[in-house]
Length: 312
Image 1 (cartoon, rainbow, N blue to C red):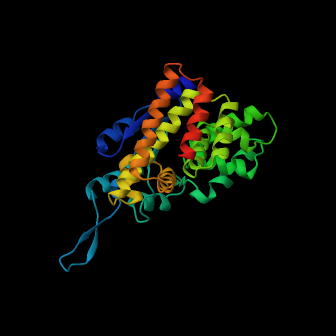
Image 2: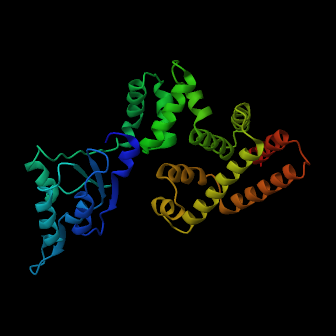
Image 3: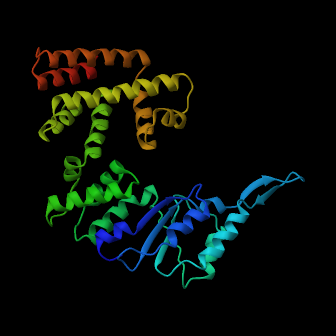
């Protein structure tokens, strides 16, 4: 695309979900401004040509071709796109194999190409993290890669950002689990899961160890109380909804939770009744007031909270 300042002037992004062909041609036929090429990105247009299923008169499903006139006009135009324009169609979901535009691209491989950018499945994310770090000249323990993949999930852009941060921080040394837990916010949050797990299982010593591990990593006492409170509020919501007969996958969608988080919270919620969780929320309110009125030293207040929740 040449000089970046002119590349931006020669780049157009269009919403293809209801885009008329005339508007697409208007942008694609334009002459580049002080550059050799124009780039036209069209998002979501080709999915409009995926065949759809409909019931036939005989009661059997049949394929219906949507937008036949627009499809024909587009295919004719694709053979006449100016050589100064790079026309790129971007789809958020995989297209049907018999999509007309894909078939066109298969026949004209000299002028068209199709690339599928599929995210790795969840059970292969750790391997993706390791490969990505090695490509950038770094190294990571498998357990650390697993923690990172679990904390961030399948958002590859977010994963790549965290990888860059970890590589810079380690400056040539292998990335360990402690590095992930210290630098990655989502991984720090996952440690709260462990802390709440220990609280729910009445493991006083383990809960205190996890609490002070967070404090050693400079976690603020108010932040820790906020995170613990958030976790117990979710536990109360999940427990209440499950008591009403709602399944975990439905609860996950209603509360807007990540599937892994929903399963984890559902497992933790089984340790409590709704009444117990309401009691915990009242106790957390008492501690919050104590901290804000300076009646107790913050670390001592959290220590007493852990002991209270694991012994009563």
